[in-house]
Length: 323
Ligand code: FAD
Image (cartoon, rainbow, N blue to C red; front, side, top):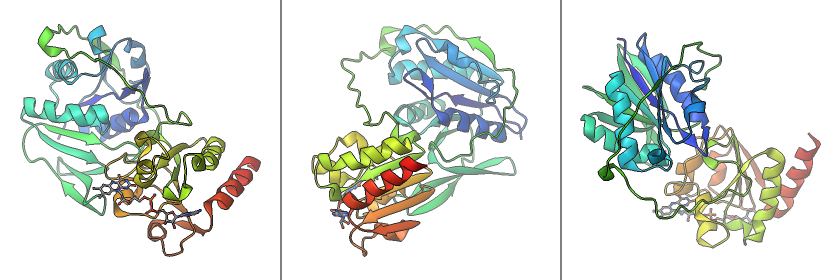
């Protein structure tokens, strides 16, 4: 059954994140002959519309307004709902990012829609969308479908297949003029931006080098950073390392940190507690470096190196430099 699918483009620092293209590809599968639209919200974002047709959007809604320069739930909700009202969406997709996680329930409530969070896959069954999402901190997966009305889903980055080739759609730009009232606006008093050490965004990174309490100090992360630089990777951490003050909490991966699904995850001096696995066990290839052969991380690792990370990591760095 044909459906109109609306995708909220995920914009960070003036750029589209890859999850936008993953969502548009999924939207084309879900639409089943219906229309697909992307929504660009922000200030100075109009230029990003170019290329979204090829990425799978029939229409690109643009709400370019100074009030949308920083994310606020009230103003973003208003602008997103105006695009939805114009388009008549049956399904709305948002990234499972900080913005998507905040905005989706607000929009779902306004539309009396059924929401499914953190989806990692889906199947089409007789016109219904059956979503797959992790449960029990990633120990199991469940299948969920919304049986009635509008569907809203947040999509975990790096899980749905990226489009293999362009869709060649028109991507017709439709600018919406939204009038914001004082009640729609929240004032951002202070913005604290945590910079990743290597400049690579953890949740979008294809390779992550992650350190645990085994790195023993803040300086102990240096060999990991050097390996990450050579690999073009992001640097992550366990909560053990964050709690010990070796690194910032913005680097924490796990149940109460970031959820990541890179192609390669290199865990250095991390024991593999269930709460850490919740954030990284869906990585495509896991390499564990730990001096304890009994460490639980080896149970989920594809490759295990039993050894001292301060010897193993520099050796890997030297080898990768030769490639
Ligand atoms: P440890 O468990 O102390 O492990 C350190 C490892 O380093 C050991 O396996 C040791 O053999 C190895 N090692 C030591 N020296 C070396 C060396 N020189 N070379 C190689 N290996 C070495 N944890 C998270 O990570 N993320 C979360 O989001 C998270 N959320 C939580 C939420 C709740 C509600 C609770 C209760 C806990 C949570 N935790 C989380 C904490 C989690 O339970 C573990 O305590 C934590 O993951 C342990 O961190 P670690 O593996 O770095 O430290």
